[in-house]
Image (tube, rainbow, N blue to C red; front, top):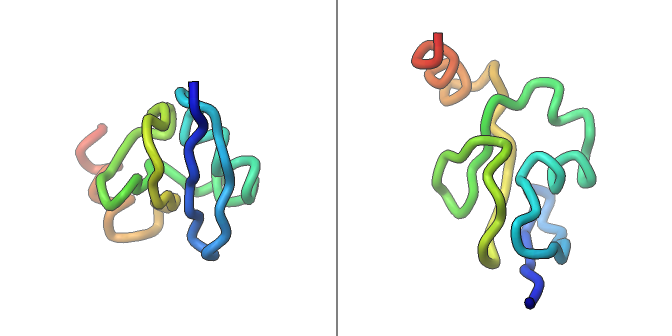
Length: 77
């Protein structure tokens, strides 16, 4: 089982094991970003915070107060 390289919003990279949830990666990077996060972008695709990582990717949180975050909130209620 090989590990994956995840590029974070600040340009730094972390190595994670396959199946590591997006939420855990973001929490290890910047726990406060999860206070407003409702989803994440994984290589440009919107994903749930519980989505496991399955390859090298770029990752960033989607905050509830962003346009995308508000759209997600509106469609989930």
